[in-house]
Length: 151
Ligand SMILES: CC(C)(COP(=O)(O)OP(=O)(O)OC[C@H]1O[C@@H](n2cnc3c(N)ncnc32)[C@H](O)[C@@H]1OP(=O)(O)O)[C@@H](O)C(=O)NCCC(=O)NCCS
Image 1 (cartoon, rainbow, N blue to C red):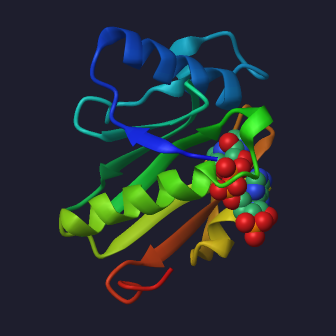
Image 2 (cartoon, protein in one colour; image 1 turned 180 degrees about the vertical axis):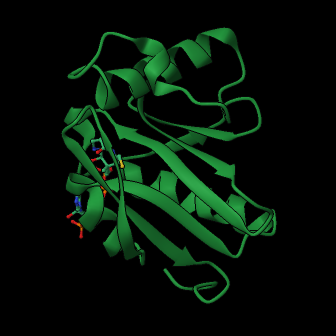
């Protein structure tokens, strides 16, 4: 499958981008579309993954400090999960973070995504927040400077 990464630019791009994010990450729990946005949207790096002429995945990067970058809102269409889309998005966000000077990546991983992050070299640090009283998250971290050049 050919996966192409793009940054959303137009209003239509952002509508598709936020719609996928909300449908995959929030819709089962809330109708509130704003619940899948936070205060970092305007400065964050947003990535869209396209395949078969449709948007199939998204991911976002923001900086907590100049050294620490955070991944949020990784989401892949159900029918495309397990086909490498999340991996392509995550790797590019890591490249962008490292290029901007970050030395560590963090994320708050849902339990179902924990093994995805572990597979990509993230270590579990601690329990993080719980969303909608049920979605337990785990803080994961990866040191970028020590992994440069690895797969
Ligand atoms: C988690 C998610 C982003 C992964 O993206 P993806 O495109 O499905 O993952 P990929 O196909 O690139 O990589 C999957 C690899 O991680 C592993 N993996 C572990 N947990 C996984 C999970 N929950 N979903 C998919 N793959 C998972 C797979 O076994 C696979 O390894 P392999 O290549 O050796 O077979 C995606 O499944 C998703 O959107 N899930 C629902 C929303 C979500 O939980 N987002 C994360 C919020 S923290």
